[in-house]
Structures are given as structure tokens and as C-alpha cells.
Length: 510
Image (cartoon, rainbow, N blue to C red):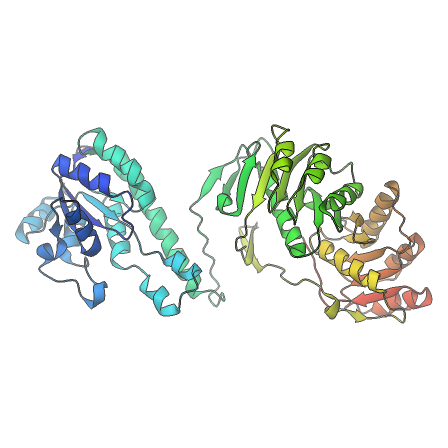
């Protein structure tokens, strides 16, 4: 069998007509017979191009309100026959089945219909039956048929069919088959996930059709890829391509700042997925200055994120720092020009998109799946555990510290004062080590911890942490509670006039 085949016929039945006109005009030029249905048939006729209705082939009308149009042996026989098989060819002649060399079919917009919030019946009607069957049949028989399964491939297909006057290579047919199965598998995954939203079936199906090759992974000797619609989430205004590690830091920054989305001006600086600076102030400029003061050393090469538009004054301060990425909901014109002054600095506008509700990571020879930690501690959640109650300012600082603690690697301790991160102890095997690390770091940057608050991602099994904190000047503590020895820490706090509140919610981040 020759690897190059001359196409003489095509079946076209598409939902999206954009970009189709040049293709059907090329078919007319090449003398390719066109079969079609419904709205596509009318579209082609309106262009003044001859088209054969599928009903003329099947001798059967479109029925059930259009649910059944192409599901017929004379259609699928024309697609699935093997042209190097004498029996198949003989049956085509016996049953007067036309050979179909090209199938151009797309699918009903199921995902868009779900995203629109449409009622379930509308969503169910967007589960394509004929289209998905045609795609699978044509892609399966790629040795004889080329399948075009998405309007995104129209331009490439037009180039292929034009290059050699309708002669199409096996390599191209196989490439388009791969694209078709990419489309069909993604579509079925979307449908399954709609029906399995509550994960009643313990099955995991993930499909991302948008992807890009990264320069490398965490290290230069590792390959790296990103799969997802980055352009939907961000508008990239300036700078080099993001690396694997940049993307991880951007993810950490975005998730942290979601905690402060509608708050007063808040600025965060992150390094290696943890915040090294965070402050909330009346102005964004002051929020940045005070976030940087939290750790000006670690901020070098970090990722910066704001919950408000970045103005000229803030941009001028940022420009003094070498940083990899700046993220904000917007920038004024003067700020943007200043920030563009560093050639490689990545400048992103964060768009308002729906974030995934689940987290997935590889584990052993499989994967772990969990709901995101959507719980944000609030003042209403707090239970006073001690005789001394936190002041209003301490309550605000406790919630501020708790939000940050939730997004910092366990074991962690966060120290904050006046809505400013003083220091964190991150990713330590001992909570005492985390606290000592935080105190040492805060003192090294000249923070006065008298009146500061402490947040812990998990309970204190012993009173050692509250004792160390007390001696450093800390006056209020927030923690989940739940240790059988909670009372030991409570007793120490009562004896030393420290306020402690419990949230009842642990925020491990492993």
C-alpha cells in the first residue's frame, strides 16, 4: 500500500464553521466530493459549492431532533473500510457505500456549556455521540483516512491538502490521528469528571490539552513541562520565559495572596515557595517596603505579588531589587515602564480565573489527590483558651499570621506584628527548631518581638514553644489545639499572662 493517498471525498459535519470556508473552496478546486449534514451542509451550499447531503447516501433522514444523523453503516462503512482488503472493497461496491477519505468533524462544546452554569439537560445535550464516533472511526483507520477533529487544526490541514494537490502522506494521516485521539480522550475525560464531581468513583482522570516544554525541570539535567492554560490565568507583559521553579513560586504566591484578595493593600515576597516578606498597610508602597524589611536578603531573586494595582512609587522601590517575577492585578503606565527597565524581569497581570478545587501529586507508583485547603481561619472561629484574651490588634495579627502559616511549609512557626511578617521558621522537623529559627531571623533583622504574635500550623504537645516565645516577648498565640497535653501550654500561658486562641483546624503543608 502506498504511503501517499489521493483524497477524492470528504465528510464535513462541524459545530464551529470559522475557518472552514478556505477548506471547502480548496476541495472544490481539487474536485473532492463533499458529503455533509444539517447546518454545515447549508453553510457549504451558501458558498455556492456542491455538497451531497448524508441523507442521500443513507436514504435515512436526520431523526430525534438531530441526535441521529451520521450513525449509519453507509457512513461508517465508507470510513472504516480497509482499501487494501479485497473483501472490504467488494462490500463497498455491493452495498453502494461511498469511500470517504477525509473526515472533518468537531464536537459539541461540552466544557463551555458546563462552565456557563447551564442546566443539566442542556449539558447532557452537549454530549456528542455522532461526532465522537466519526472521530474515533476516522482516526482508527488513519492508513486510509485523514481526520480533522478541531477548528484549531484547520490551517495545518489546509496546508497539508494543498501541498500536493490532495495527495496526503501516511505521516500526516497518523499525526492527525494522534490529534484526534487527543481531542476524543480529553472530551471523554471532561464528561466523566462532570458525572464524578463528588469522586463517588475512586478514579482519577486528568487531561490538559495545552502544554509547553520548559527549558528544564528543577535542575538543568531534568526535563520539564507545564500543562495548563497559563495564558488564561496571566497576561505576560515583559521578561524571559518562566522556568519550572518560577512556576512553582508563582503558584505559591498566587495561593497565598488569595487569602488577602479583598483586603487592604498587601504585598508578599516569596522564595522557594515560602513567604520571606508579607505586610498589609494603608498604601501599597508602604506594604512593599515593610514586606521587604521582613527579609531583604532572601528577597533577592524572589517572586513579588500584590493584591492591588502597582503604582509608580511602589515600582520605583521594586526596581531597586533584583527579582525574578512581579505579579499584580494591574499596573499603571508609569509603573510598567519602570519595571520593564530590567530586561529579564517577568511581569505578569493575574487574571480572575477559577482555580482548581483539587490538588494532585505523584506518590510512589501512583498519585495522591486531595481537596485544596479552602479553610481560612477567621476571628469567628477562634476559641479563647486562656484567662488573658487577645487585644483587638492582636486578633488582627493572629488572623494575619494564621493565613500566612497555612501557606508555609510544615513544621512552621510564623511571627507577626502590626500586620507584618517578622519571620517564619519553615519546613523544620521540630516545631521548637522552627520557632528558634524564626526568633533568630527576626532578631537578626532588628525586629522588636515584644507584643508580637505567634502562629503554629499544628498543636503544641509540650509547653516548650510557648515558653520560648514568651521569653522572646511574644504575647499572643494562635494554634489549632487538639493535643492531649494542650493544658500544659494553656497553664504556662495563664501563669505568664499570654493569650492563646485555638482554631480547631490544622494547616499542615507537606
